[in-house]
Length: 284
Image: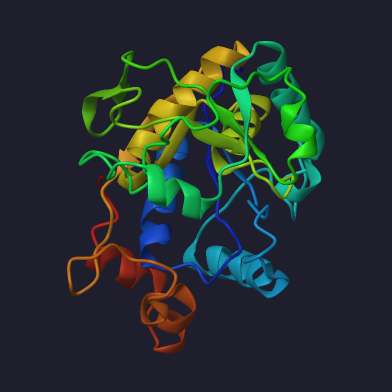
């Protein structure tokens, strides 16, 4: 791992960035600055069903307008290019092959409908992803049974009963039990695209990210990713999860809240300085 602090912004071009994104990203930038480090921008454009080029252009424009500055990214290049995930498939395939070789994953032919019908309700501490019921778990990575079954995904086999512990930079000690707080999860989708968990780990490792700053809704994902780091033989970065900004109904902000998008706020005459001041961007 590079001794220089390396932080990152990792937006997805699936809609306009909102104030919640800006707050989390601002904390990431402030951490990088406080540590005399480097901030990179990664365009997470793997979801072809939701990705639009217009959102990439808007993302870059809105980030610049708000006051973000990065040293590496899709628009400026850098030593770990490319910074568009769509151009990094070789990294993801290499990680998948390593997981296959270690028999950490298995082919799964279950559809979302199958899982909803068979699974128990999500655990109270989970992030709304139902715990996989284990229908295909007996299959091995070397099995050829999936080849004749049409579409399939690759799913990571979690060590049931193991507690995954880590210290979060904001929330302190965290513990999640594999098989209870989260189950076997998809690392490669049936449409031949890496899932978020694998792509994120592969990129953060390859780009030598030293600390990941992101929203508190991804705490359980961090436990999953610790298992991937271990399986791939990579030391994980530090993690710091930020409290989420809420809408007027105490729900978390999402890209569907267009009224609070940076674009709409700018059109209404708001300035980055006033938004940062009014929304307490100075702390976690």
